[in-house]
Amino acid sequence: STTEPIAVLTNKGYGQVVSVLSILKSGNFYLPLNPDWPIGRMQDILDQAHVSTILVSSQLSHLGEALGANYRKVIIEEELQSECFDTS
Image 1 (cartoon, helix red, strand yellow):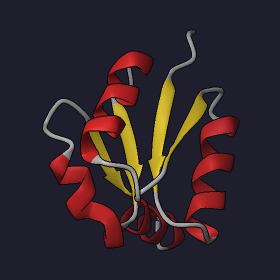
Image 2: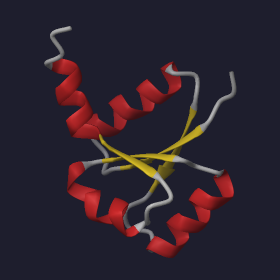
Image 3: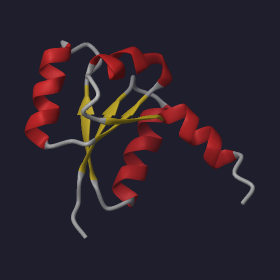
């Protein structure tokens, strides 16, 4: 299997730590995005790295949407909640 870059767009905190550890455990690598960067800079970085998935915090979901529809966006808090309460 091949490794893929997965971008992380969140402020520093537990969501960032959990996201990075999860990405590394999956065998992929993470690409941190600074929420203070201009959208155009983030898009350039994502395109150059051939990113298809962005993990984004709910607080910054507006930035994730501004990046366009070329990426699969996963809201970190929603995934954490579904994993914590998964009864299967």
